[in-house]
Amino acid sequence: MAGRYATALFDLAREMNAIDAVKADLDRFDVLIGESADLMRLVRSPVFSADEQLQALGAVLDRAEIGGLAARFLKLVTSNRRLFAVRDMIRAFRERVAQHKGETTAQVTVAEKLKEEHIEALRAALKAVSGKNVDLDIKIDPAIIGGLVVKLGSRMVDTSLRTKLNAIKHAMKEAR
Image (cartoon, rainbow, N blue to C red; front, side, top):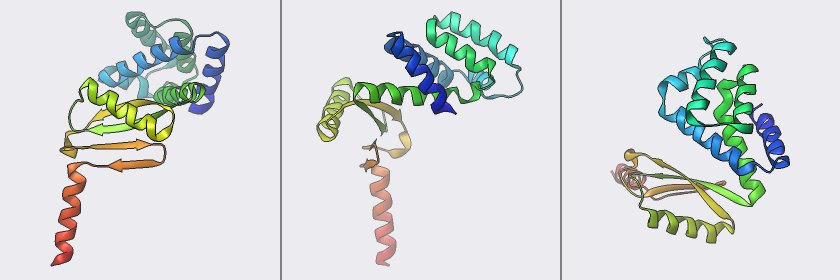
């Protein structure tokens, strides 16, 4: 379902030459959902009626200055009672945009925030490997202790200290 909605939105945005504007608005909305527990509850909870969700969503969109095609799309999704899947729709839309632009996305997990020069170096290295422009989806997870985990397509490289320590622990158990 999310893919169908995303494809329809992408086709409409392409016809209107508004792909980048729609992507920026949807990215902003996705960040708002991630930062606000109340908005996440509004999006995920079946307790709210479509009218209640639509009214609250309208206020959020106005406050965040999200308008145009993205706002109309989010309101349509809400009135169709599909707001619970909006994050999957946004993810699928991003994939369509990346495919259209010849880009790919890499999921990167790090222990702490990276400096801009490290981000650019990582992006350049991944571009050299994949041959495509690479957008980075960076998540911070202190549990990996150090290093990083990179997933690009079906390939994954795990250089985290947690994984290395677990490998040493496992090797020590086998040596007994």
